Image (tube, rainbow, N blue to C red; front, side):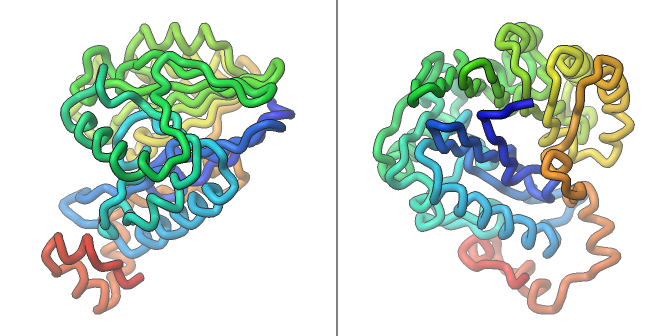
Length: 325
């Protein structure tokens, strides 16, 4: 679909982790989108399985390698699967000051403004980033509603849109469109479908040839409003009718029913001669969703004694000590 814009997904649920991190390259720009990755602290009452840590370490390496090439790094919002904090946490984020510095030092960082249209927890995280990872950066710009030009490549950031449904308690985030000549790639971050009709209209107005989007968090069941979930699925179906190629990943792939739930979306896209793929499938790799298999993994592949001992450590000790994988 794109000849001048190269897209390489680096970390996502289809790779076994929580993330939407991508490397994007144009003739003018090397760009790293949302350089964060994490694991669910608890799922089915269980901490992550060793295989999840193996996937986390592998994705961290891919992000680090891409950061060595990147000139610009974006932060759509301040959840830890979308940016890397500078504190040590090997338990869920595989993060440390060294890891964060390697990603952000010497880069131009284009980030969500933590002073406006943001909830309390992300405001704290955004402020902390400005004092740590943002302080390592060559330049830190708050990108809400702004456009940036790098030669013939333009990055257009949306005004803040809802993290899911309208007036979501999770706050707001930025979408970004990468444009080069007549090519357009849209990275939507956590719009969850989108659940908000206002976000749907904004995406349609951008008219991208390729869209990177996360589906609604169906795995949360009754913890999320089911009307919002259905709206997210319906809006996603409408988008795939209009966008030639959709890379669909993130929240919805935490649900073992995801192929059933998304079948109408795939069918609708196919009728329009459009494609929908996961991040792994986009790279012609096998899907490797691990989070929803966590319970089965512990049953089928019990951890080694060293890992079991590490799991029994107090949480603070585990955060400061890499797991034996």
